[in-house]
Length: 170
Ligand SMILES: Cc1cc2nc3c(=O)[nH]c(=O)nc-3n(C[C@H](O)[C@H](O)[C@H](O)COP(=O)(O)O)c2cc1C
Image 1 (spheres, rainbow, N blue to C red):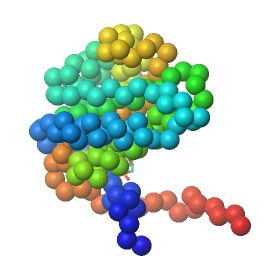
Image 2: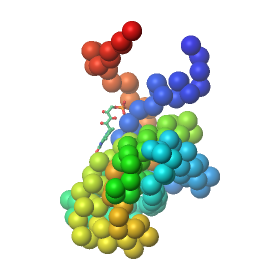
Image 3: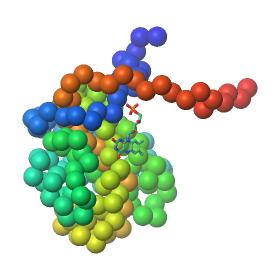
């Protein structure tokens, strides 16, 4: 079956090497819009997205969060997703938003990769203060992040998918 959406899903890869050039503002706005168009539990949209741009800002975030290095593979943009505590399915909803970002990035010839280390950064007091300084309310918890940029090199081959993960009941 030839279908643009399915093709985007099946050809997306986690990209782990990026060119230093920044993504276009129009593409950044499109990524953030794609995030906001994810489904959310009871349509609460109880999320905040923060786009951190540029090597300096990204390095600073890693330093403040106490990371030894930079886990973002040199991506020039990192989009953080936070979910509001105590709102129905807010973590699941923010996760879907991150997937939307990864798919939209791929659809616009950008690469993306979910980076989990932001959980460490934003669970420290210094990381929480940084998020607060950016305007993220205190009752929002980090869910994850998407590193985004132009891939440096060809996309990796698809990883094989595990057998036995699917059950069909009729
Ligand atoms: C919740 C979650 C956390 C992840 N954390 C990281 C990470 O910290 N660093 C990384 O390089 N990849 C991370 N990944 C990407 C996975 O390693 C990747 O999706 C998996 O190996 C399958 O490869 P693919 O995305 O190319 O299909 C994460 C993915 C998910 C869904």
